[in-house]
Image (tube, rainbow, N blue to C red; front, side, top):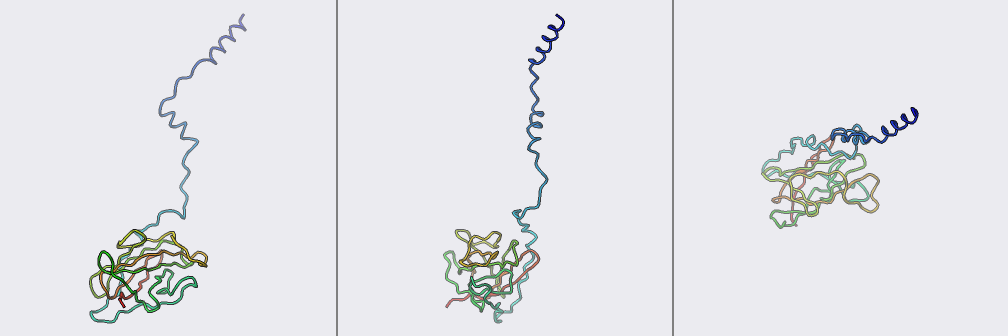
Length: 202
């Protein structure tokens, strides 16, 4: 009889319903198998754009002075001549730094410019600009976006047939308010480059 009584007690204990956990206990129990690991560096992390926004360092050109255009050269067999010594180049201004523009719908002038970055540089690129010797801005557009005062480049959105490995390219439009002498400032991680060009109509 004693053994039977003990079995009854054990059976009753096994059938006892445990009290429901509190909300805090549910959260704790559910979260523990999915604990967020420590953050690891990622190449896809958003670029630190403010660190690239250095003051514009455009050259001073006196009234009536000749435009000190940047010369161009073939930077890759896949593209036309690019201006400057890289690693980021504007393509579409020939070898003499002249942008042949057409009238823009919203006023001023515009034309296509292809930006390319060599395999020597894989970081973000910030491009801004302005007019030399007078007031005026350089603005940028791409696709259905623009014009805007700065151009931020990371992952490429185009490619060319036979393009060399790890080169990047970005088709765009350059907008200027008038004909005359202008400059791009190209900022990347560890460098600043200035490219001078002349907006002209034939």
